[in-house]
Image (cartoon, rainbow, N blue to C red):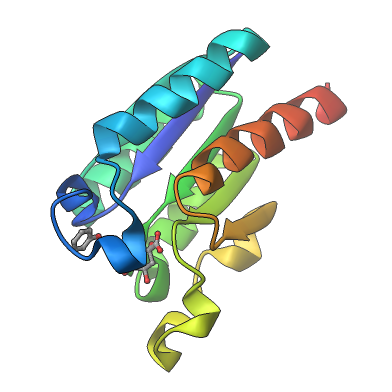
Length: 146
Ligand code: CA2
């Protein structure tokens, strides 16, 4: 079982700035938490980050044949990207949208997600644990749909 983790723009800066909003862990440290849980579950993961919308779209398109599910923190593209939404919809893989922060408790432009309607569900506001919960959700969905 293989799960693709995708991270959008600026998430490579985690741990360096805005710890009050996004926590103190780097993206590499969050990946470590996910890998630990994935090993317990016997799941293989691929963990990627890009600042480029098109690269994320390509990874989703290519992932269709390699992965059984996607977990995605699309960062700011969550609120802007019809391209990501279309890619997720076209891939047809179970996809879990995740966020570190509770976007509903923040600025109004973060309240709307363009990708949520084509995702299986959304997990947000639990900091780095949102990633681990996203993994558990994806694992559960794959198990149920088998
Ligand atoms: O809460 C989340 O996970 C977000 O996806 C993070 C995005 C934001 O645009 C979404 O509304 C919610 C921002 C990621 C930027 O990460 C930074 C990390 C450190 C310093 C500055 C930005």
